[in-house]
Length: 305
Image (spheres, helix red, strand yellow):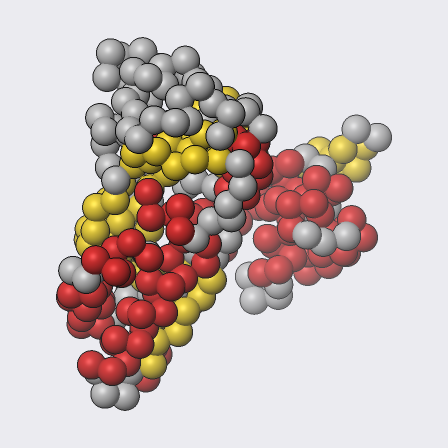
């Protein structure tokens, strides 16, 4: 295995999964030529043919099937080793790396980073922006972050969590919605409204929780379209194509527009948690949780986070 470049192996594994060099290039954000080059170099390193190219995509040779079956384990093992190495180095340097979604917790994370550095001499806190919860989990999974701020549930992702704040659930609906003038709503009021779903969550469990599915009467939540981002979701809500459930504090940080945020009195709230992996520096994680809980006791931070 010493002659195998992990980049080439990763490219091959995506080709094997998608049965397409073009599809693998799109997934990896590489050109088709670059992916083909990676596979050819991997074949030369092993001295075997891995793929048979056809007009409808690619087929795996028996050697390719064997590599596809075992290669993912190799890549995962290397990623876990790298995470452990980075975590040890970070702990020795007195560094804590926090992942956060800028649209959701950037102001909150900045306050926490400042408070931690002020209370722990020599500590350096770095903030790593993520576009959505799945990217936060990727940063934790490959060791580029020690901890993150995320709303639960996450699903079975093998991480530790500690709840630091509970946020009321609100529904976001168009200002043209028949219920837009209400000050509060219930899930029964919204029983027939399709719920839009930004494609950003990390698990089916999280998806169901954000949908408030099932409803109190046992009926499934009416599902609206899946959209790429939260911003797209707000645009579709503004156009009257559905509603969206979200933690109420997001209202202060997301773009405005022709929408209203209304508390839903009978919907379960969102728990905001510190999330971390086994290799994170535990003494710093313990201090982080304590600082967060002290900070969110101030109502100004609760409203702004």
